[in-house]
Length: 537
Image (cartoon, rainbow, N blue to C red):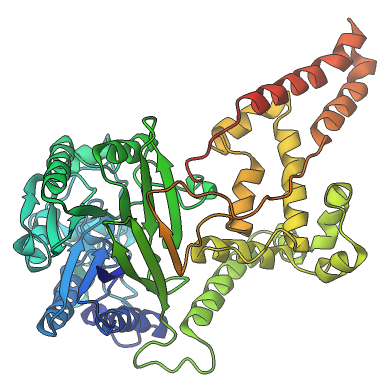
């Protein structure tokens, strides 16, 4: 079974673009249209799956215009199936803006505020306070009403429930037959009762889980292979993603384990804009593989072509990059290079706008300024050090970000950057594991070490995230034995602090010197005996 799969199309209607709209915004719908055209041209693949965030801000115009494009694909013989997600409906706003309308600045409400009724809401009350005086109809802010979940269920019926053989109407989810051997579950992971979202994580309601369980049993009885598509990932692409993700944007571990135990062992997701192949294993030993597809309007701008053999549990993923955008001249650079430059320029400007001298310090920091701290730990050769000494830390951080997004990090274990950053991570881990800082790992780092955060951003040691062919029913094994780095910086630091405090100790000075290092060593032995087991293999 061969199909194209896209995620996070983030389509924007051109009707929202007033004269003078920035070219970057104008390029946005063109990129989405280019990706859909390319997906429709994939040889021997008449199925296109889209896993949510069909539009950028959920406005009716964008949905209507995207539906016209999808209908054109259907007219060409393509079978298109979609599920909607959080960018596709309104919750904290009932209206969104037109581009290049300088009078508009809509008020952003927290997710826990009551659900707006777009038919009765006074949209003037949704714009910022300084614009509330706009009563003249000729200068009324140009806002467009956003869709509700119920409207989306009806709007996309021809790309969902109308083609399905089984529907869970309460959860806006459905199941379709892709060929005589393969069924696909299109799961909407947002509650139908939007009011409930303020107390619940993004997940599936109980009625949906019962429906999934019944379909799994039916598929086994009829000899069909059943896989699922959903928006939010089951497995975090990299541990670092957990820092910036709240529970509404991430699966709790039990959800992935529950689906695995029900009998779902292959899921395609999106949301993160990452390219990733991740695995989770339930306590019962059942395995679930989560393949995450990037956005066509982010780095890397790509979608996937999947060749699935459900009977033999094998899948081949071919990553298809948007090198150009229809109607735009990018010069000699590719669209991927254009997005990367724009992304880096945005964050460079943010740092420049920080208060001095912090802004200058961040942008001027080079490897040679950090290397003395980890020189004895990583032990680079003279030639290796000369290769990287003048590299800017900001540029390396941007590389790590793009490694996360694109998957398959470029810094292999034999590169000096890998050695330096992993050695520096080991030093930070040694300090964090000391008694005074033990809660940092638990609270800030979500139980992971700095090294566990850093390593996947440098190099993917398991199944490649792009252009891979593998058995998704088998737990992946590391491709190589990675070098380990250790440091005693924590013990040294704590001992030094105790020695500095010795002149002020009035009682038991020996105990004052020994207590913190002893507690630090005890804490490290405990962590070694009961290490953190990340959700990602």
